[in-house]
Amino acid sequence: MAKEQALTTYTWQGKNSKGQTVKGETSAKSIQEAKNLLRRRGISATKVRKLSKPLFGRGGDKITPADICVISRQMATMLAAGVTLIQTIDMLAKGHAKASMRKVLNQIGDDVKAGTPLSNALRKHPKYFDDLYCDLVETGEHSGALETIYDRIATYKEKAEALKSKIKKAMFYPIAVLVVAFIVTAVLLIFVVPQFEEIFSSFGAELPAFTLLVLAISKFVQNYGVFILAGMGIGGYLFKQYYARSKDLRDSIDARLLKLPVIGEILRKAAIARFTRTLATTFAAGVPLIGALESAAGASGNAVYRDAILFIRKEVAGGIQMNAAMRSTNVFPDMVTQMIAIGEESGAVDEMLSKIATIYEGEVDDMVDGLTSLLEPMIMAVLGVVIGGLIVAMYLPIFQMGMVV
Image (cartoon, rainbow, N blue to C red; front, side, top):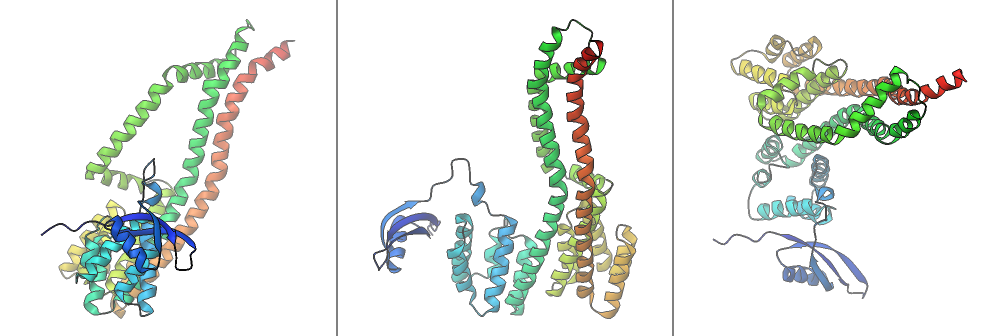
């Protein structure tokens, strides 16, 4: 059997039935097919060409988790409005701004039209739709309530993306300020300090120790700065490669991050929020608790909590209540285990898990805002000491000369 030709995105320009000049993009297997599709829409194409890739890669066309989040919400809304699944996928494929997303949706739509279940069509794109996503869709297909499941998936994705953005917010500001401080300091040491050194050489007087120290640092950076940057780049690349391949290293870093002051507490609460939100979504969708715990373990985002959740899964499979198994791991707060115990007794575990997730998501939000407020004056103080110290070191000999005169 011949392999089916992949869809390609084409840009086109032509005239519509009213004689107006129009242009846009369409996906087809060939230029001729693209022209035929346009002709059926009443458009006489004058130019049809393959969409060229950007010169410096396709960063702007990359499919992100946020795109999957938006697509999930649109699917939920349209299915709830009574639009058929095939029509929903086709409409989303035609209207999406990214060519890469249109291509994926067109491929999924072709599979569904050929009789493939949606969950199986999604599994062909594991880079964008993980096992948890596909399992939930499969549950919705079996239960006949795909629109309800998609609403839960969309809510879950939105909560997960919101939590991720909060964590990034906590990390981005201090990192950005430190990078700027590093660049400014390097510029001063490489370009500004040497100018002062030429002036000082004409003084013929002994320079202060602080000034000599800064001049020595400036010479070192000028002589070895390129090698330092190259070493940092190579070291960062090697670490990234080793980090991607070594599970032990990743687990060790995850454990150490939890011990950091303030940031460690934010990561703990975020892991609990992800765990409870994932478990609530899968359990409410009808996924058995054992399978739901396995999905939640991978979604927790931290090796310590992943191992603890897998231990809970093993204990629950052996007949132990979930709250008792959680308590024995020593990584979940008493409030969480007590709320889970109440949920198990009342038969409303999914509702209790959702409440826990909401509580911890709110706490993460508050802690991130507090951390940002705390870091701002600290970073400003560090910048003042570093930049101000360099300036003082350069002007100190001039001040001393003025006092002598």
